[in-house]
Structures are given as C-alpha cells and as structure tokens.
Length: 399
Ligand code: AMP
Image (cartoon, rainbow, N blue to C red; front, side, top):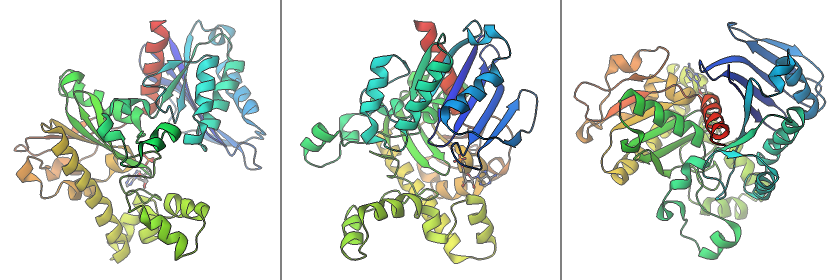
C-alpha cells in the first residue's frame, strides 16, 4: 500500500492528512492548533471514524508538533522508512515565477522558497518551517513542494502584468500570481472527467468561493487568467477582504482618514469584504440575517454575487468558447442562493440553472444547469489535500 502524507504548516498550526494512494482515501488526519500558546490542542481522526477528539496538549513549538504527528503515524518502523510512506507533500503558498509545478525538495528549492518570503511574508516562513522539521522527522522519505501559485504560471503576460512601469516588475517581481491554484486544478480535472473530455480541450471558469475567494479562466486545461493578484487581496468580495478597489482608496485612507500602511493593510485584508459591509464574515450568519430583513446583509450578498457575475462575463469574453462553469469551496458548494443570483439573467449567453438541481445537495460532483443551458454548470467539492497527494505521488514516481 503506497501512502502519501500531506502537510500544511501555518504560523501556529499544522494540518496533516495521510492518504492510501491505492484507494485514494484518507487513513488518518489531524490538526494541531495554537502551537506555542497556552490553549494548544491536537485534533486527530482515523479512517472509519466520523468525528475527531479535540485534546488539549502542550505543544510548545512546531518541532514538538511534528514529533506528535510522527508518533501517531509511526506505529511501526516500516512506515517511516519509506516502504509504505512514499512521499510527503507540502503546501507552499508562494512559488513566484520560480515554480510552475510540484517540485522535489532539496537545499536549492528550500533556498528559493526562502527568497520568495517578501512575496508571502506571513505564509512562506511557516511553510518552510514545516518542510525543515518534516525532513528531520522523516529523513528517508522524499519531500515535495506543491505551490498555490503554480497552476497560474501559464497566464499570458498581458494577463499577469499590471500597467505600471516595467522596472517594478523587473526589480520587485510585482505582477499577478494568483492563488488557490491547487483547488482550481483539482476542480478542472474533476469536470473534465465528468464530461469525459480530455483536460487539454476543456474551457471552464472556476469559482472557488470560501472565506477566501477567487475565479479562474481556464482554456484548454490551462489557467489564462485569475482574479487574485500579487497577493490574495485582489478580485472577488471575500469574507474579510475587499477584493477589487481603486488603488487611490489607499492614498485617500492615508491622507484623509490618517491611517498608516499597516492599518490600511489590516482594514482591507481583515475588516472588509462581507464583514466590512454587514459586520460578519461567515456566510451562514450573513444569510441568516437576510432572513430577518437585515438590509446590510442583503447588500453584502448583492455585492458578492455582482462581483462574481462581472468576472463571469469578463472571463467568458476572454475564453470565447465556454464548456462549463464550476462552483467550489464552502460557499460555492453549499449555497444555492449565491450560485443562482450570480448566474441570474444570463440565459441569453447560454447560462441557465435548473432551480431544483441547484437546490439539491449531495456528495460528489453534480450538474445544476437547465436542459436548455448551452454551458454546463457544476458544483464540485474541492479537495486540495488529495490534489497535493496526487501531485506528490506523480513527482516521486517520476524520479
Ligand atoms: P471555506 O473557506 O472553503 O472553508 O469556506 C468558508 C465559508 O463557507 C464560510 O463563509 C462559511 O460560512 C461558508 N459555508 C460553509 N458551509 C456552509 C453551508 N452549509 N451553508 C452556508 N455557508 C457555508
């Protein structure tokens, strides 16, 4: 049985999933939270169990956290020697222009990820720490980096350049990178399979709508545009991020509201989006408030869907032929109202939902377009961990 361990190391957390790659299912998963804080805890779930226990455990640092994971997984030595565990896949947020696919980790790769820290100062250091301690804990297992930005490295230059003096791209690498690439890639492959179409022929627009949200235009299986930019702040309205806005708002906030750059950063990344409009970022609560006639909650939903529709129209124009649209992540998978409102009034361009199909729920990928809709519309449960595991397996198998 071939196994792959997927690790997602954050600044105060480590999330892991162990996959049986023969059957493509999770053998064990866990989450270590609040590392280095008094309330640190360990949540672990093994195959066949429907719930996990959240146990308070002192986890002073990431090294100790990795030791806990190793102990939990390493019931027998053959597991850790790589006989069964054939690879470890690490989620890395920013690969800049250096990485366009999953990459076997060595000293040079570690150094490159380190060089990219200015582009992702909050994420890449934590991802690197996860890589370094995992190499120490599992020295005989091949390690692979899978980058959130990699899928979007196929963007043509007119899509990734900002119209600012070129020296800022050359000296500071300021350009559109895009994120959620692992999810967009996974969803695109799922839809190609569902349509029984080669990936290399599929034209699709994917909406990853979670607390973070992004859209991607995919032509012939390759990303040609995406809504997030240099950072995940650009594009759609999100839980706490503003998405698109006139850059002059930043100067105005400085000169008129007297905010510092740090304060503006916090305002646009953590206090805007749904939360900024109606006070809460959790879509379930926003929807609940709309039921009570809360006008600002209604505005938040209208803004959220209007922005999606604008990207849908723009990407449709860019793609020309459109085979499918896919909705994924917490909101995309679970909120029929958002899908309906975002696609409303688009029958004239071949996009129409079937109300009953859209309202239905269930596991797995499903189609929700009407019988007359020229474009297929899918709801696709995303699985970034499985995508990382598959890319990791391909990478170690290719060596
Ligand atoms: P994610 O970042 O993919 O975990 O998605 C988080 C967002 O999805 C939050 O705004 C949640 O409120 C929303 N969400 C998740 N499940 C549901 C659901 N069943 N109904 C409404 N919103 C949901």
